[in-house]
Image (cartoon, rainbow, N blue to C red; front, top):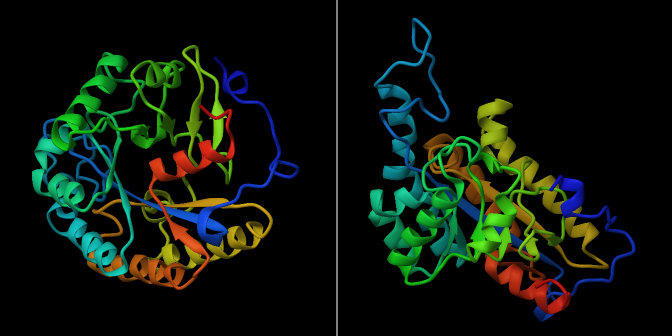
Length: 292
């Protein structure tokens, strides 16, 4: 299906208001993306260009740049979430579940939600067998946590024309690739509907730091501005805001303080609630009985 066949144009003005429990007016969910980069393959992203150009193998500086995030940066996130009692969502490659067992254990033991993120960190249009890739990711998460993942985010938000269909057929209940709304929305698939939970390309450290090359404080400043406007919008109907981070980007020493500061700011609002993707899904289904 074309995107326009999966979802109708439906402006947010005029929809039936959404109400969060406990008098909250806005939900925020925080997604930590953990990936395993194959040292024998070209790096998914780079921080340093080799002197002679090309794609060297092995690419030690760029592989190590990412690896720092999983060895050190991730644990800064854990400390901040523990301190502020924030439930996080771990968006993880299937292969990374066993590749970084201490990370998976820390998330599981804290009750974080596990979200499928491809079996390896590759464009979903380039994997050999998309269904098998999704299934292997599901199995890796279920084997480790004892629970099948309910949500999916494609590596780099990539999809094929069939991804939503396959996700439903493989038992997924929500996806986060379709960044087009501040409320959950329902997509059509050949196997029945799937809910899309609002994700973010704006408050995403990949876009800000690696593509747009902003100073570290931009994450805090932009997230604060985004939060202020969505909070204002949520006066009449609840809205959802996402914060997306990667351990090798916002988890590094010179950037982490700005991520912690925006979490502290948002935590100071008594009518804003932190939720996981599956919590948002269950709430939305209760509000919109047709969102199966």
